[in-house]
Image (cartoon, rainbow, N blue to C red):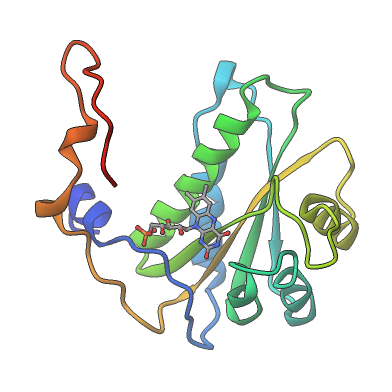
Length: 182
Ligand SMILES: Cc1cc2nc3c(=O)[nH]c(=O)nc-3n(C[C@H](O)[C@H](O)[C@H](O)COP(=O)(O)O)c2cc1C
């Protein structure tokens, strides 16, 4: 990596990947980052299921009707879980862990995309979390927050335009109510 602000500007969601697999070293670096992510009261409620098997990736790609199809063609998916019994802030913890995975992967020059699972449904109307639980034999107690699809970028995303940041969403000292026009 060059520097962190450059990494943030250049990170975009990547949904097209080459055939090249991640190396064992890359996978280890990414998982280390996930395991070092901060958590409320250091409760470390997250769990990670690493999926590389083609058939399982294909099955994960239909866990919801939109926004997941590209999982079939990624090199590796990390299913990010959390244990509500370990922390009342497990949703925040799991989101940070997933973000660490994305940023560490970007630092390695890899592409990622978050696929939201919690609160989503399959085409047939089944809870997407339950679909993934059944597929990967995940205990009912664990929340299936998201899947991070990873791989070598087949397409480079356009960097963020720092000239177009929504500074109107930032308030100094107190909130000033103004309807925000998106
Ligand atoms: C909580 C969350 C859920 C997301 N869910 C999906 C998803 O299910 N499918 C998808 O293709 N992208 C998903 N994304 C990626 C967003 O669409 C993407 O981050 C956003 O459009 C901004 O683009 P960028 O990541 O390139 O900056 C999700 C991102 C977040 C943070």
